[in-house]
Image (cartoon, rainbow, N blue to C red):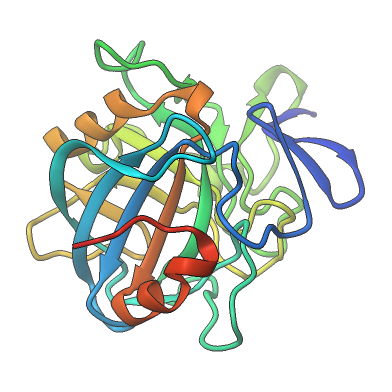
Length: 253
């Protein structure tokens, strides 16, 4: 059977992604990152918070607010846990598969996925229209765990495909903004399929994603720019204050 993988491995421990190469973990927000989506939760067990967009023209410039202000968001039903992103995090509660927690840390924004033939007007970012043959395995035993794969049905359909294929016709998944948690490299069982997507209700948390109203998500998608290498930071308030200086984070009201 033929399967197309979303990642291109250059060498052991080194992943090429969106024109940027990550090897190991950075100590702060890399200078190549000029667009930052920042979400702060009241605490580790919080399932609600706010999201703001920041930009900077270059690594030496301060972060400046962009977009239309704060966006109300929902997290995992059980709150947050440390995820695997581009920056080292302290020991503590770690994100696990199906734990109902959103990953905390700093993560690259990957690809936008959706049902539509193209992104909303005014957008300029990587996009993949989800087909009936797209999958994103969340089974830690699957060799393609936490990866976007596309099956070629002419080459045979694997036994796991029906349970691992990406959903169709689900309003909450009309747009999916990939949060690259546990991606570079992948650790089986550390959590998979983390996105920003449309919320299912004003007070209905997710299984681990960051969700919001559709209009707000479309606003986020329209703001994303490939050449600005956007990343996502999600932290509880106390941890944000703890890492603000060392990570080079913006002031968050």
